[in-house]
Image (cartoon, each protein chain N blue to C red):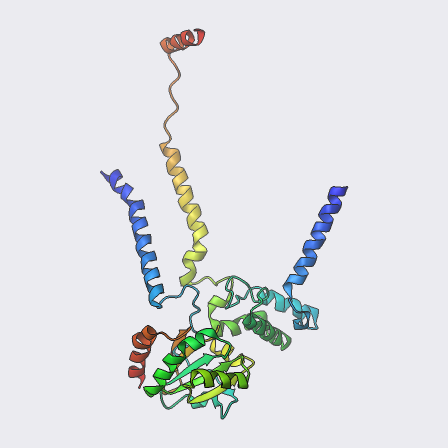
Length: 177
Length: 152
């Protein structure tokens, strides 16, 4: 009898592995898991010091006082076009969004915002891309939620989706309001 | 003789190819060859965050080029290898190391070769013990029967 039960061991192993892979794929389609994702080192930490030029640009000190979304984008970035409407919708609900133009020329950025709408309360130019490296950005777009104390609470890699906004961002905005 | 020449040419070609591979753009290299060699050695341990299976030394991505430049700036500024790597780990986490450190979350990763040997050894031992005993030698009647069968 014991021998028979032993036969079930590989079977149970296969079932467990299958369940694991199924859960992984499900979370991947939902967007809550990315096998290529690089976890952010900034969550729970203060924004690294920086000062970005612009008109007037902004510094790390400007990211305090209220919850602020910081969005890294570029005029050459296709997924940034995809999330443009989402950012505009967020801006209309009263969330301040600060934009950081990554490796982009100022006239190209201006043309991009002219064409796809400008959701940004403030705009900083990171043409060398060094501030982005300090934040651990691996590509554009990336979006960060900074609470009123200047602590990073959330990061989203890639274009903002409706699920990301309603599922993660909105609860956090309420929590840190 | 010709064979040896062929091998020499092939080896030379591979070596040259390797040298060209390590640095895409010679203007990126540090003027001090010892520092440049250190920068290359550091860069080869760091993952390009864009094309994730390449080191920043091998990758053609913009971000990898920026990181190569930052590594070289820090090497030139007299930072130790570990300080340079730590600087990047602080930004991108241990994921940026192509060879992850041994810690709780990587126990299975580093332990899997040992585990594989243990499991394989266990299976081999088990199989050995279960191997059926060698058959008994043929007795006289069987020998006679075998002989008669072979004779026909």
